[in-house]
Image (cartoon, rainbow, N blue to C red; front, side, top):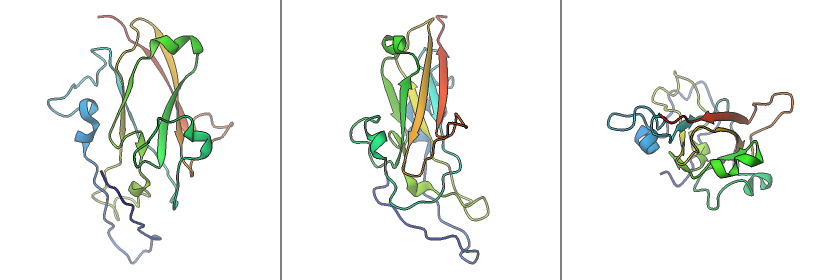
Length: 175
């Protein structure tokens, strides 16, 4: 994984095509959907994968997880500046969730992949993804989770419930 960040500077019309950081779908492990991997993304076996991406990330320098987000993420969050964290929407669901595995760039997204300058200036760009696999959900039970995105340049709004977060509801049935 990339260890250092490269500041690409301000967008200027005379700069031309920009280089893009490499992202490989194989980094998504069993959640990649590639040939030879589980094409049902774990749902058939009761170990569902979610694929998360970020949209409209504004350019920023020296962004990091704010203090409020530090307690929500696992220790040593790799080199990611934008971190994903899941929390239960109902306390009674605590025994139903089991282990959560992250694939891709770790627990989130390094800012070196942003901003995206569009197809003309970034023709080789592949958006970074994070695959989240729930490996031990309780069968035939509904589980509701909220995923919140923590980063210095991520804003939250009470008017827009899904700005900086999303909700997930699972019911894994025995087959």
